Image (cartoon, rainbow, N blue to C red; front, side, top):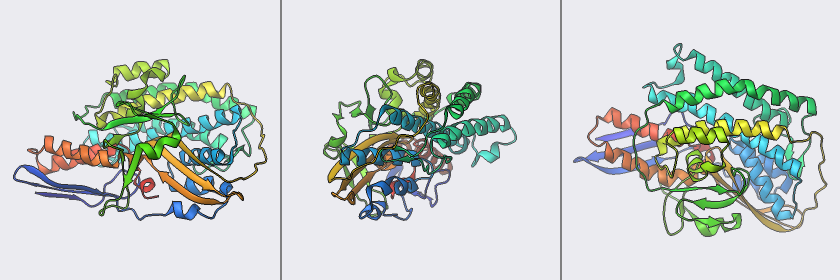
Length: 417
């Protein structure tokens, strides 16, 4: 029996799956990420350092803020610049609101239909019209926060640059954003209840949970590399701890932990590794959702995303009380150097590294995205899932396979950057 999914729907980017079952055993399996390669790393070479954030934002239409923040941090390290605390607060607000928005889209529009036996959210209407309205209201709140700090744009912001911001919202706008968050609380909890009530397939995996760790907080824009198997290192240790491998059937590389194997990044890894650093209410929901301890069932990633929406909404409210309006953009002096940065994008660990010359021109660029980090684990865990359900009808196996891949919330477009 051969099963071939030429186009995997309800994911970001283009990929297919094919596998063969003969004699009651899985004989062949591969996930082909056939989205055309986009050569961003080569495109960046020869460009001025201050052009990089706007260019890498175009890698993804869902997480442009993550690519911008990561590239900015790597470049600032390369040229020896440290931004002030207010700039760091504003960057956090943008990252938190972007992650909440991304999770919301994945949960309601992309993942939810799998658990209702539907091919799209539209097939759930009109029965789920109330949920759709809540989704729209919440999406508007999160996008509004990102846009306020992004120069009026939630996607591909224009005001966040190397060194700081060209402009920050005035105090009146900040007060307006702050006042809108409590009203979103009820909608947010209803979305969480919908997701946490879903019956998730059981799947035990061996993937190493990897996420950033930061003392005193839930790491997003910086931190040390950590894992459930004792991995520990600074951003500069990344290439010593991980390696990439090309495969002949895909345009994306597979990343593995050196000397070990597959890793899992994203909301599930973050929540499982650092539940004690969530907000109080988010931590309580994590425990109630079966996320206590080192949960390695990828299907639970959707529950972890729902928990993170609660956490990041509350964090945005707290940061909006601290951030200051106004603009203070320093004049930067380029110099020769190299810098690496790691952040947590919505889908997990994101790595950027740049070398610039004394004129501030990029001479080398390296980017590794969350889906590249998850690729090997997705294939290995898909194999386990199929083997566990080998006696099921072909259609049931196909639906389970699609649901597992979507549970990771992959961005295949990012993976072929």
